[in-house]
Image (cartoon, rainbow, N blue to C red; front, side, top):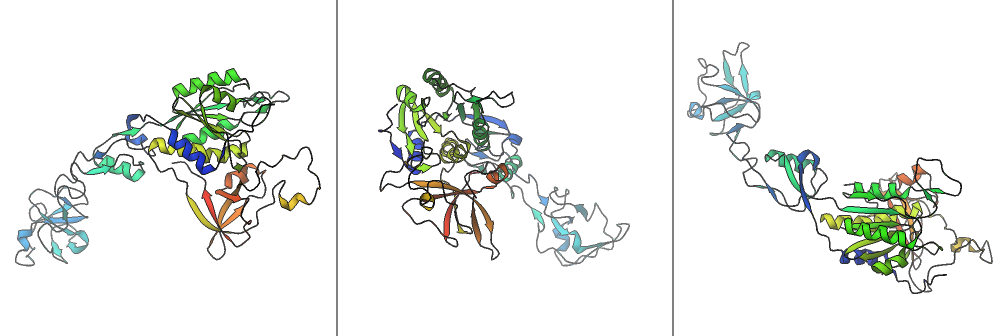
Length: 424
């Protein structure tokens, strides 16, 4: 049996810091159509190419008049004619030639045949009711700063500034390599003894939603040389690599040992569970993220370790979001917990020994759904078990990291929930 006694265990925060501090991405940029730019990150400052409006225009639906006709107060309009003394002027439209002031249409009385006009209220000054050149947008005005995430509103401002293309940071290319002799692609006749490979859909979907470009490899068998070739190839072509499964203590789990030969292992495992056998490494300057095999662990370890790498590549904040909430229901007892220990005096062969060294801190990752109580306070509802049906799993909003060194929260306590990262 291979020796795992010297494996380096780190906290979740330490693991993220090791990954982020070790990266040396070379960010690329590309020019894309503005209509495809929402959710992308600007790679440079973008300024307006035009003045808006580019001529004096009307602020609201009005009639255009000459200020000079109002210099002595309310004029006699009995002989006024459209096109000579007044003209219609609509919102955002250039003022008609020869007119400089606007009176909103609600302050005007017109005869049915438009032969007579009267004013309920008079303009307060010359140019009243109008917008001057460049009052909304000036040529050269900064619209978007380098590193800004392009929202629908910012894209509309870019269009106002006469841009139909924009330079953005390229999506980071992330290799996703599933490993395991037991895995079989979805969609075929499943052989006896095989398991369907599904984590690549989960991980690739998260990568795409967070602004990355996923490159999914075919399933790689649990063979050290095969895994080595796949990882070295992926590291040479992608910005970082996600290697799924093969990091535990099974006889065919070669990933960590392989990385010690072709790269540098940053850490071998993390102080949380599920996902204890998450790891990080470098091949050359390319980060390699090891994600635990089971889907339950893969879902949130991807949130923990892939999300911040993508965010750093894009130049966006990497810190998770937290939300305080009142615990609405008790956390269910976990398998092997003190609550269940009294049921058996002696552990059975199927019970996994504790991975926690005496006196060290270890976190149990508990999923929660957020809701609002009858009194309007935000509440946290723990997942009923570690085995959720698809609808339950998809309804979870975040995580509570429960320390073994702290008392378990009770119903009514305020707990800090880490919000599950959403697509940008």
